[in-house]
Amino acid sequence: MTARVSVELLPRDAASLDAQLEELAAIGGPERVDTVNLPDVLRFGVRSWEAAARVAAEGYRVVPHLRAIDVDPTRPPAFLDALDTAGVGEVLVVAGDAPADLSRPVYATDSVALIRRLKALRPDWRVYAALDPYRTDFVSERRYLDRKIEAGADGVFTQPFFDVRLAEIWAEWTDDLTVPRFWGATSVTSERSARYWTTRNRAVLPAGFVPTLAHSRDVARRLAAFARGRGDGVYFMPIRASVRAYLDGVV
Image (tube, rainbow, N blue to C red; front, side):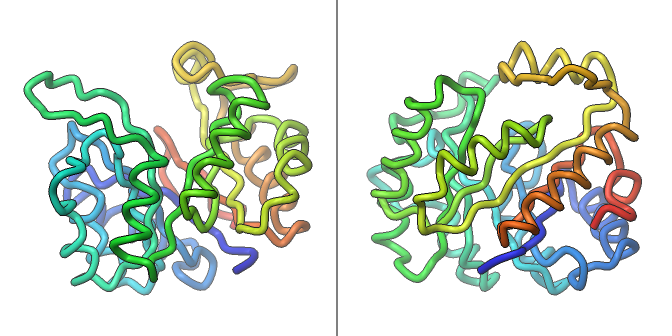
């Protein structure tokens, strides 16, 4: 699997998901973007696996995100039947932040444990791991990634890169892996959004970075060229920008 292009759509509700799918169709649909990632955001009414069937019906390969912290290790995961019915066999496992609603149950399940369990329950599924270049130091993040690969992860999706030079370093740092990688990019269109990435996610913004759509589109183009030159996948995350405004002419 090489040179795949994925776009993240946020399933707030059925209407907003349909609107994003229309925008994706307007820039070429599955001929330009073959894969759709669906994050699982608790404050919205649609879980990632619930939205998967709707997206798959439009001809996309679908990668719903699964939050490890939500999965009870003693019971069958709620999403298994829904994804089987939708014919979806690719998922991305993320650790998951603690929910704002403290009445929601959380579990000690981590990404490594959920990856291992999913590969036991659905060995034919393609289960992806996340790589966060800002979470900690290089060595610790690489060791964490190695544990996920050893647990059975079939590929890697990264958090967004804001500087292709950092992506190049991480590419060298992971070139010994035999699993596919998707290099991430996102839209940052305000000072507030930039502060979110630097304070909440500890992202590194390079000199010359400006929080505008034009700059984000330029980074997306350069990251896509970088990934394409390597035969790797690319993963676009439109945030506070429409899919069409961010990616028209980029994909």
